[in-house]
Length: 114
Image (cartoon, rainbow, N blue to C red; front, side, top):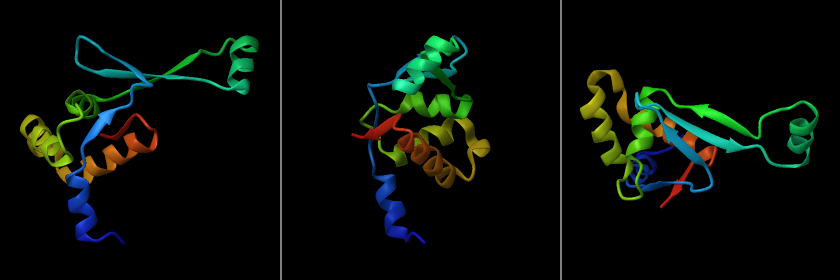
């Protein structure tokens, strides 16, 4: 079980987008992240089965908003305040939900520590 100090430390964490991934924002504000399928197996599947070179990860409204706010300057606590201002009660429970979402983005290496 994580203690309160670990949570406080995470709130101070500043994240930046990984330049390895390309992203696009639609007119409606939804973000799509493009992940290149690399490696020998993927190369074979692309040639033999006409599989795409890039996979697309579509972020929903909440995720797209967070993605747009990650700039390498704001910490997690500041991101949470932005989310709260935009979504209000819909974002609750704010910090547990935000923390889980950001850790998922970190696990897939879409974002990293600044």
